[in-house]
Image 1 (cartoon, one colour):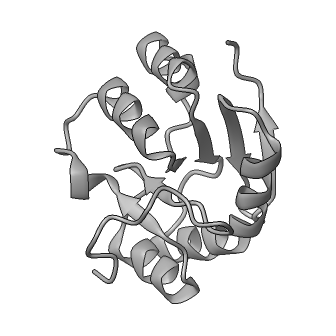
Image 2: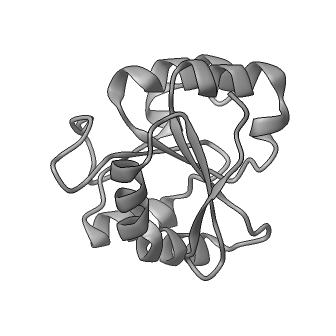
Length: 142
């Protein structure tokens, strides 16, 4: 994996994506490497069965943006609370059934807008990313 060392929290233009276990694949990593997008996959820091509320709280210390496929995370009380209390920014792939290649293409295409939203939005915040790469804010009760 090209991202052997943990990247700094954020460079001026390139925030780091923390890739949740349900979104991670080697093909996504390869696409991000090719695009020069810094990332940290879940499995580099956490066991597969680490509860979401545990890794959500840990991610806050690094200033990373979260990428996930878990569309239900905002409805689970412990996970929602961890997201809000840690003041995180989460980007959720809203289309189910995407291949690893499609996921890589979509995330790379949406990355500029992900970065823009991360600069203009006060956390906590939740966004969806559509199959076309459109990034839109979702309601997150605080």
